[in-house]
Image (cartoon, rainbow, N blue to C red):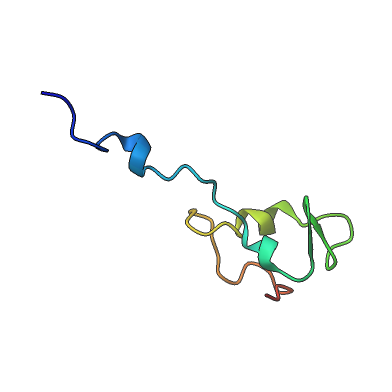
Amino acid sequence: MGKELYSDSRWWDDPRPITSLCGDCVYWHGFGKCDKYETKVPREILDKSFPGTENFDENYCPHRVS
């Protein structure tokens, strides 16, 4: 007997990457560029901006505006 139809994990697994909440901010220009930081967004803030990760902090950036 074979597998059930659509039972393989490739049908239901969601491989999309987790995106940073910085991308929704009005100051964000992409590639780590932001109006509120001189050169680029600090790594500590970027690490906290990914929902679903262990470092996620809802209030990760004091400048964030959606």
